[in-house]
Length: 544
Ligand code: VG1
Ligand code: CO
Figure: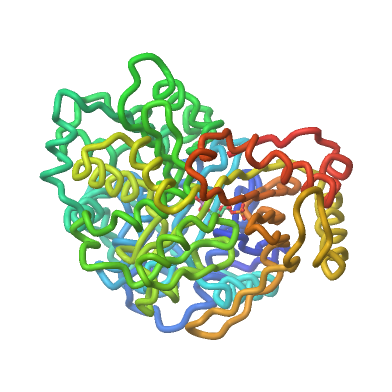
């Protein structure tokens, strides 16, 4: 066995963001760049000798090359076994599922999620711990610290593993097992949802749906589950073949980037239900016939209807949502008499709450919902959850949402993204806001009065760890809010995210376009933060 120790020098930019390390492919292709980061991960872990690592990715450009490198490094560093997805494919939630099911030591997921793929686009890598969830901040910080001083890495000199053939082989002393990408995940889904009932719905002549996998990782999963297992007609799953460049698209399931699906659901003779997933399969967008379900509402509606879904029929321990997510789930939690937790942006903050049994359902406004079945958000799980609700309630998506608003009130919600802003300008904008915070309380802005203004800080109720500066919040006396934060997943310049929310209990006023309902708040946000002036942009690049 030929284990080589290669001398290297640190790169100064290997700090993981909201979800792993994301950079342009060209950055990852620099000699030793990927190797340094992988060795930094291994060096930050203890006790993995002889244990199992799960490995896979979303199929984007450089996925296969990266997998071969990581396999050889895992072998050289003493892992006992790697379970790797067939053809290198494992969605983020499927990876989480496999880690948990086989009690693996951890997993590595290769993805830049919804960022475009291809030689001139993005690549990413994230480490998940033994609970199946994204590494918590103390781990990502240790990885970063190690990456700044690393001087060598270990790699086995060996031929490539055939990722196209299922089954086991040896790489040095380590076992490599190429596993079916879908099987374990599908079995988990069957244990949670009423597949018989969903099958009846999907095969009924009056129901049609369209699922858009956006040429990203969920294609094989969606085809196996919806078409092969649940009997939906062939062609239900669109863009179901994972491609290295996602067909040139932006695999982000929102109204802007999933436009093919939006056209179908807003076209003539539209199906009753539509859904899209992102690059690595953890996000979802839910649509009805000419109707869009806001992700925050989706979480609230799932929670309110959880009792009709077998896996959740015994009740929810609690709900958790990220801070910028609307308070719609809070209202459901209140009625159910359970706790609702507010965490910083990023799934890693839900891990402790799920492990401690404090939360059952979790969600983010960024098209992410999930539960304690894994430790990641899970796009197809959300689709199955909705289908299970539809199959039981036999109502349209729109009727279910409108009824929900009548019962709980409507949280008008929108997110405005300003992408590719010059970093200095974006930082100035946030700094100016922070400087103003102490003076804002009690101030009148338009017809709103500021009730609180702060920079969100989170103390984890399980381990007491504190995460500061997680977003500037301005809350008003009528319950409306606006939040400003900078994205932690981009690879070029900065992205400013502005989140807006207001609450409308009156059913006769629940039919406005959110941009209209939030109109004055949008104006106020621009005045307070000088968005147009500082970004030089007169409108957001993406509105969701
Ligand atoms: C974004 C979203 C956040 C999500 C993260 C990872 O982060 O806002 O809610 O958890 O992406 O999702 P940011 O820092 O850019 O706002 V994924 O599907 O890209 O792993
Ligand atoms: Co994703």
